[in-house]
Structures are given as structure tokens and as C-alpha cells.
Image 1 (cartoon, one colour):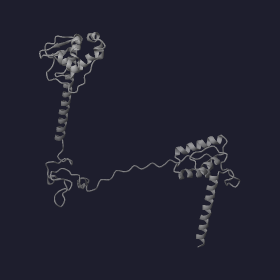
Image 2 (image 1 turned 120 degrees about the vertical axis):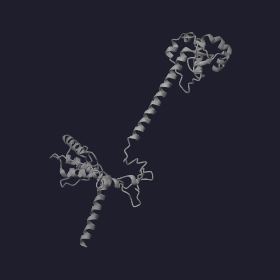
Image 3 (image 1 turned 90 degrees about the horizontal axis):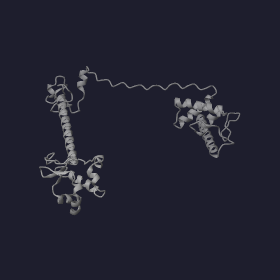
Image 4 (image 1 turned 90 degrees about the vertical axis):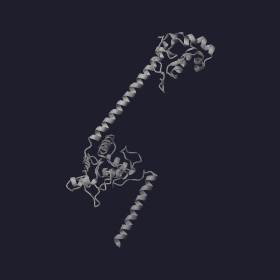
Length: 319
């Protein structure tokens, strides 16, 4: 570490102003001062350096041992005993304060970084001001958004109202956003602009034909049930359902009964036939001997409702 600092390394009013004090711990541990300090004395070293960073000028200490001990909170006798290690490398400059070469180096780096950042911000402000000035100079005279300095009567292609003023312009000639768009109509030959054409939705592709082994009536019932439960089959879902039906068919399940089972139970998917499924008898009607009590009640209610509807329809026809 270098000593004999004859001149102050920077201005007397240099302050940290919130700049963080960062140490290169690898460099600190390799220094002779850290090697000479006992484990009990090393925290006092760090506190001494941090205290110097907060002084004015930054990174310096007063040339008064009693004041230094008071700043770091150390007893004067303990400071006098540890002074050879604590103050190793500190030297008095021409301003009457003590400086350490390593800490002064950190302060100089801080000053240089602040200077570069200030220059960068100043250059950015100058660039923004130049761009704004260039934009202001390049604004055309007939710009619809900014016509400051011209009265409505001075605009050659403006459409005046009965009072001689455009309702879309104020007294300064600046657009107010309340115009009727007559200028655009005049530029277009008096014809209002056409609204943008809407994109037509693509029609749904035709569904793939069903395999010949799929009963069309049972399939239509299944698709109708899916629409009723608000889960209609998409083309992709239709293909997957046919594939699942083929898999169940290969497993020994009747495709027609599988479709009827899902339709009857309002199932969105296709599943193997259950033992209590609703098989069909020879007349094509569902047998109810193996039906659950809930399913039996549902079917009876449906039949009763159908009977009442037929009865009312017959009465209406008789009248």
C-alpha cells in the first residue's frame, strides 16, 4: 500500500451522497494490514474504512486520534494500543486530513463514474431537444393536427360553417376533435370513406363420412346429445370418436349399443358396455329390467310427459 500522500487527491467538498462503499475483499485479505490485524481487530478495520467513506471529503479522516476513536466508538486507550495496525497506510495530506491510497482510489473511481453518467444524461437531453426541434421544423403547414398561427378562414380547403368557422377548430386554429370530417369528404369528392371490409369467416369443412359399420341413426342421436349438453363434436373430435368406437368394436363391443349407451346416459365420451347397460330387444326398444332406479324413474317421467303431449295434441285436432 502506498503512503506519503502530499496533496489531497480530490476536492475538499467531495461527498459520497448515497454511493455505496464497496470493498474488494480478495484484495483486502491479501493486504499486509489485514494479515497483521488480529481477528478481534478486523471488525474495527472495516468500521474505520466505512467511517472514512462517510466523511467530507469522502475517504478521509481527521488527523486527531481522539476524534477518530470517538467516530468509530472505540475506547481511546484501546485505539492507542491498536493504532499501528488500524492507521497503517494512512498519511496526512496538505489539507490537514488523513488519506489512505486504497480508499482514495475507490473515491476517484466513484467521481469518474458520476462524471461519465452526468455526461451521458446531458448528451441524451441535447439529442432529445434536437429531435424535437427538427420535428417542429418539419411539420407541414396543412397538417391537420397542428395548424397553430392560422385562422380557419386562412385555410384554403377548409369547409366553413354558417358562422364562418369550423366546429372542429378553436380560435387558435388547433384541432379540438369535434369536427364533422367534411374536409375528408371534400378531398374524396364528397363521398364518405368506405368502412374496411370484414373478413368472412371460413365455412366449417364437411365432416368425414362415417364407416359403413356405424349405425347412422345411433350416431345422429349421439351427436344430438352432445349438442344438447353444449359439447358439440368438432371435426377433430368426430374423428377421435370414430377411432375410439373402432377400438371398442375390436374389443368385442357392439358400436351401436356403445353409442346408445352414451346417448342414454348423456356421456360425452364412448365407453365399454356396462353390465347394467340398456340393451335392445328384438323390437328395437330398450329393456329396463337391468336399469337403475334413477334411470327407470327418468324413463317413466319421459313416457308420462309424451302421453300428455299426445293427449293435448289430439284434443287440439278434435277442436
